[in-house]
Image (tube, rainbow, N blue to C red; front, side, top):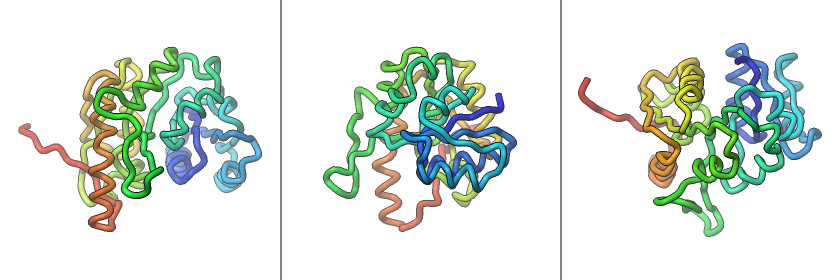
Length: 217
């Protein structure tokens, strides 16, 4: 699978898309409008294997999709992509349900008994949602060594074959220590790491870190 659709035009989408292009993938960045300035800049900067369009066009193009939208807008963005374009696709969900309405640090709009990953899976039953990479900043996502060590990355989702394909991409990014937590309900714990991540960042003023699980061999 060499065609990737990126949903979202922010720093995360740009960083993920650029890394995938360097790995030899074709990448289409999607947004609400095919005239989105950031998406067009991404295409113009990255050559013939990069393109841009609407959410629906990116979803139709990609064999695997990355959700790089803001968590509070993810389901809306996926609805704009359309269930027909999403049907049967693997969606790598990087988003977090961060609510900044009361300022910093943000709270989670959903937690404990539900998660954004689960909400996406429930809304789009034909999608194969795989949660991963949401617990580090975007530069560490595509280069875990930037954390200064060998951090642990979690992954969860309902479909084992989908997780195997996502793990291939994680390994290409440089992730060596990956733990499969199980089905998509485990996105709850992964997303609830974000308040700790934010507070660590605010305390250290350094976003280049990851979490490490130390265990017996």
